[in-house]
Length: 140
Image (cartoon, rainbow, N blue to C red):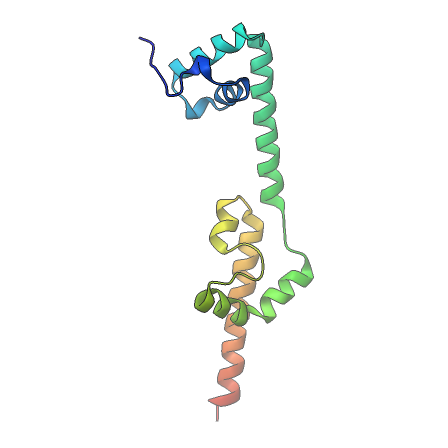
Protein backbone atom coordinates (compact mmCIF):
# COMPACT_ATOMS: atom_id res chain seq x y z
CA UNK A 1 0.00 0.00 0.00
CA UNK A 2 1.26 3.41 -0.97
CA UNK A 3 1.55 5.88 1.90
CA UNK A 4 0.61 9.49 1.24
CA UNK A 5 2.98 12.14 2.51
CA UNK A 6 2.37 15.80 3.10
CA UNK A 7 3.29 17.36 0.73
CA UNK A 8 2.98 14.44 -1.67
CA UNK A 9 6.29 13.06 -2.94
CA UNK A 10 5.39 13.73 -6.57
CA UNK A 11 4.72 17.42 -5.83
CA UNK A 12 8.10 18.05 -4.17
CA UNK A 13 10.88 19.75 -6.04
CA UNK A 14 13.86 17.81 -7.34
CA UNK A 15 16.16 19.06 -4.57
CA UNK A 16 13.82 17.62 -1.91
CA UNK A 17 13.56 14.31 -3.76
CA UNK A 18 17.33 14.03 -4.00
CA UNK A 19 17.58 14.75 -0.29
CA UNK A 20 15.14 11.92 0.43
CA UNK A 21 17.11 9.47 -1.71
CA UNK A 22 20.44 10.54 -0.17
CA UNK A 23 19.21 10.20 3.44
CA UNK A 24 17.88 6.65 3.40
CA UNK A 25 18.02 6.26 7.20
CA UNK A 26 15.56 9.12 7.70
CA UNK A 27 12.78 7.81 5.43
CA UNK A 28 10.54 4.76 5.12
CA UNK A 29 11.13 2.41 2.22
CA UNK A 30 7.85 3.49 0.61
CA UNK A 31 8.92 7.16 0.55
CA UNK A 32 12.29 6.17 -0.92
CA UNK A 33 10.62 4.15 -3.66
CA UNK A 34 8.24 6.97 -4.52
CA UNK A 35 11.08 9.51 -4.57
CA UNK A 36 13.27 7.26 -6.75
CA UNK A 37 10.43 6.67 -9.21
CA UNK A 38 9.63 10.39 -9.39
CA UNK A 39 13.29 11.22 -10.00
CA UNK A 40 13.42 8.66 -12.83
CA UNK A 41 10.40 10.40 -14.37
CA UNK A 42 12.31 13.70 -14.10
CA UNK A 43 15.38 12.30 -15.85
CA UNK A 44 17.57 11.15 -12.95
CA UNK A 45 18.56 7.53 -13.55
CA UNK A 46 18.84 5.08 -10.65
CA UNK A 47 22.62 4.96 -11.21
CA UNK A 48 22.87 8.74 -11.04
CA UNK A 49 20.85 8.71 -7.81
CA UNK A 50 23.14 6.06 -6.29
CA UNK A 51 26.22 8.02 -7.30
CA UNK A 52 24.86 11.15 -5.62
CA UNK A 53 24.06 9.17 -2.47
CA UNK A 54 27.60 7.71 -2.39
CA UNK A 55 29.08 11.14 -2.93
CA UNK A 56 27.03 12.61 -0.10
CA UNK A 57 28.03 9.75 2.20
CA UNK A 58 31.74 10.22 1.42
CA UNK A 59 31.42 13.98 1.95
CA UNK A 60 29.67 13.53 5.29
CA UNK A 61 32.28 11.01 6.43
CA UNK A 62 35.12 13.35 5.38
CA UNK A 63 33.61 16.32 7.22
CA UNK A 64 33.16 14.20 10.36
CA UNK A 65 36.79 13.09 10.12
CA UNK A 66 38.03 16.67 9.77
CA UNK A 67 35.93 17.81 12.73
CA UNK A 68 37.12 14.93 14.91
CA UNK A 69 40.78 15.80 14.21
CA UNK A 70 40.44 19.58 14.67
CA UNK A 71 42.43 20.94 17.63
CA UNK A 72 43.03 24.21 19.44
CA UNK A 73 46.21 26.15 18.74
CA UNK A 74 48.69 26.43 21.62
CA UNK A 75 47.91 30.07 22.27
CA UNK A 76 44.18 29.26 22.46
CA UNK A 77 44.87 26.56 25.05
CA UNK A 78 46.98 29.01 27.07
CA UNK A 79 44.18 31.58 26.99
CA UNK A 80 41.67 28.92 28.06
CA UNK A 81 43.96 27.83 30.90
CA UNK A 82 44.82 31.32 32.18
CA UNK A 83 41.34 32.82 31.90
CA UNK A 84 39.34 29.70 32.79
CA UNK A 85 37.64 31.17 35.90
CA UNK A 86 36.66 34.35 34.04
CA UNK A 87 35.32 32.42 31.06
CA UNK A 88 33.44 30.09 33.41
CA UNK A 89 31.97 32.96 35.48
CA UNK A 90 30.84 34.92 32.43
CA UNK A 91 29.15 31.84 31.04
CA UNK A 92 27.42 30.88 34.30
CA UNK A 93 26.41 34.35 35.52
CA UNK A 94 25.65 36.19 32.29
CA UNK A 95 25.26 33.33 29.78
CA UNK A 96 28.03 34.88 27.70
CA UNK A 97 30.18 32.52 25.68
CA UNK A 98 33.32 34.47 24.80
CA UNK A 99 35.63 31.73 23.57
CA UNK A 100 33.94 29.63 20.92
CA UNK A 101 31.41 26.89 21.44
CA UNK A 102 30.46 25.39 24.79
CA UNK A 103 31.50 21.90 25.85
CA UNK A 104 28.17 20.45 24.80
CA UNK A 105 28.21 22.16 21.41
CA UNK A 106 31.75 20.98 20.67
CA UNK A 107 30.88 17.39 21.43
CA UNK A 108 27.51 17.47 19.68
CA UNK A 109 29.11 18.94 16.55
CA UNK A 110 31.73 16.17 16.44
CA UNK A 111 34.80 18.10 17.62
CA UNK A 112 36.09 15.35 19.91
CA UNK A 113 39.71 16.50 20.26
CA UNK A 114 38.69 20.11 20.83
CA UNK A 115 36.17 18.99 23.43
CA UNK A 116 38.82 17.02 25.34
CA UNK A 117 41.36 19.82 25.09
CA UNK A 118 38.91 22.43 26.32
CA UNK A 119 37.77 20.24 29.19
CA UNK A 120 41.34 19.62 30.29
CA UNK A 121 42.52 23.25 29.88
CA UNK A 122 39.58 24.78 31.75
CA UNK A 123 39.59 22.15 34.49
CA UNK A 124 43.32 22.58 35.10
CA UNK A 125 42.98 26.37 34.83
CA UNK A 126 40.18 26.54 37.39
CA UNK A 127 42.01 24.13 39.69
CA UNK A 128 45.26 26.15 39.41
CA UNK A 129 43.47 29.39 40.24
CA UNK A 130 41.80 27.73 43.21
CA UNK A 131 45.19 26.54 44.52
CA UNK A 132 46.81 29.97 43.95
CA UNK A 133 44.01 31.80 45.77
CA UNK A 134 43.95 29.26 48.58
CA UNK A 135 47.72 29.43 49.11
CA UNK A 136 47.71 33.22 48.87
CA UNK A 137 44.92 33.94 51.34
CA UNK A 138 44.31 30.88 53.48
CA UNK A 139 47.63 29.06 53.84
CA UNK A 140 48.89 31.16 56.79
